[in-house]
Image (cartoon, rainbow, N blue to C red):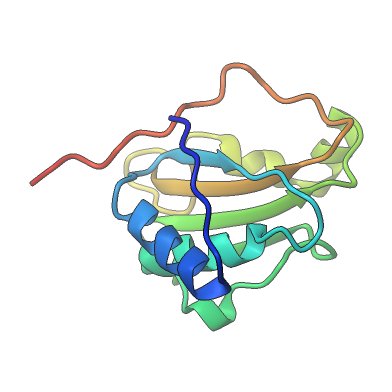
Length: 141
């Protein structure tokens, strides 16, 4: 799923993120790329709040922490928001322990995998995988 949108304020970007969240379902990985200050975290605020995983004001950039997890501990779905900009090779990624968020969870588990949304900012030297799942629009009810 590829979509282009132009917003003119942080409020518009957050609102579009909420609307986008209404059209997707887990498991899903979203890769965001852009210059510093381009609105990646602002968009993520809207999507995370639209998914009901956290309030907009609780969503912050993971630039220095590398990974934020949103959603109550016993939630059926979690949102993983990571920043891989400083990761240069897979070994660096492995040492962070973040590979666990890509493992499928057993049906009885709600901690990650099957019910996860993942937002990642890939680094310039980190090779992206061609077998990542594409966005799946939510089913109409």
